[in-house]
Length: 239
Image 1 (cartoon, rainbow, N blue to C red):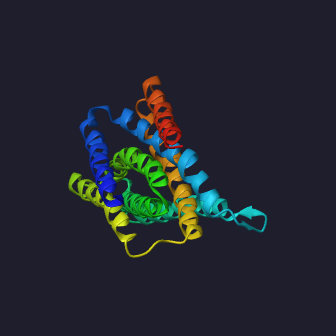
Image 2 (image 1 turned 90 degrees about the vertical axis):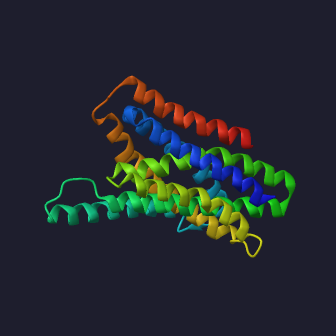
């Protein structure tokens, strides 16, 4: 059952990426929406799950929040190091490796989504249905963000499509893997915290500034708010 539901996530991921590709003439709106979706996923979905699964304090601070800060700093350091390397070679364009790294993180997250989906169905049908709703609906945002992140940093359309397909296949493979094993809850929560920090950095430091750089329009801001609201709706329906 979990693998069957993951096929729905596969289709939703491809649909999200297709939408991101089709509206390239409104790039600022695409980026504004992507930033809102990423912010919503981090603040309303990833962090609450991470804090619940890996909330053991480390020197007074929940483990998930420490890893969240670590993910943010790791993303910042990687981008700065790649930017310095690019500048040393006389380039000023965006570094494609940053986009591929971010997209690879999205693929890993989708793989974890599939594992979580399979584990939920092992617990029971009701739990599986709840997680399935959350995974399938927010995989639209995953596909949208994977394609946007890859292409934003100067990668070719072919590479963006390859990463999108990998992101779409990931939850199916993750769900299938639970027929063999499951991840410990604390490890999954730790990963979600770290990934949330990295994703927030990309949204706040890259996606949203780029969205408003050439088109500081009210419609771009509304798209960002709409993206957050969409994730809120998804989380609320999943409860």
